Image 1 (cartoon, rainbow, N blue to C red):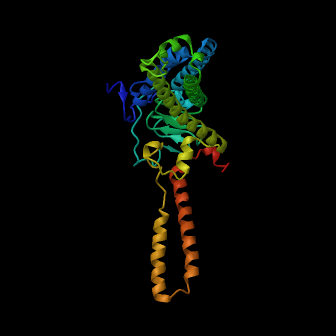
Image 2 (image 1 turned 135 degrees about the vertical axis):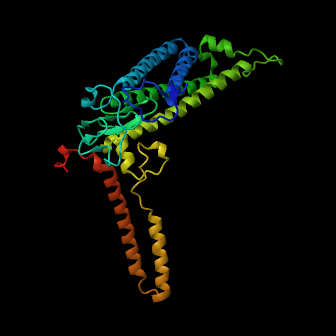
Image 3 (image 1 turned 60 degrees about the horizontal axis):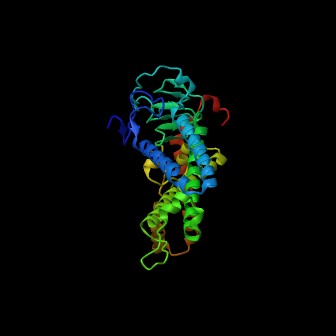
Length: 340
């Protein structure tokens, strides 16, 4: 099992060509299971609940969405997003990076591990795939592959089609719940027969029995799960629209923003480097101000507040400068030096 799937992936000895190579990622396998399970429930159960005209429309929409999602998912996983010069080379063992020789993997537009010249400063060397990716955006565990210039469009299409499937599923569930309470006769004949409770012991019609409660419970749970998945996918789509407007990649956004989330969300464990805790500046300034108050009174309080503000601004600027030095120095490409 360990050879088939891996929870924590380390750098392979050879570069990864596509996301279907072993070992697979557990999130990738979970995604496949969810895809197959939801496809089965949507086509075999949810679509059959609708009345005849809506059933045909539902089946057509689901088939189009699932085929589109499957094709975009396969294309995003199969396409190798690595540098063009790297794809021309044979697949050989990649040497381990020695920081005693080089400070960064990519320096002056050349990767010391792949032994190629990169096309731009947006090229990054992914440690999980062990290769240089052209216009690196991020490493996607759901695809078990990197997302770069060559497969970014297919990645966005994959996320968008999954979002549309989730929204359509949750909408159908919500509509069927409303129909169940208002007019059950609008459901399909098979659904009406299944939830028909018949007369109760008091010779009056009862809407609730074992089958109808199970039917309603399925719609609520399945619709809630679809709505939760749709919310997460919508957030992801909005994020990529946002960074597209900014003109940056996911990697650049994470590295250049004041990201304070868990390290596993970052593309690099150094995402917290280059930060200066400004609260320490405030604390030290407050301590110094109290000492000055005891010694010299309050006549210099106003000047000290201005000095504290300047110290904080300088500290923040130093933090940003240090971050640029740490993260951007090895991304400069010789052809782009003049542009800067």
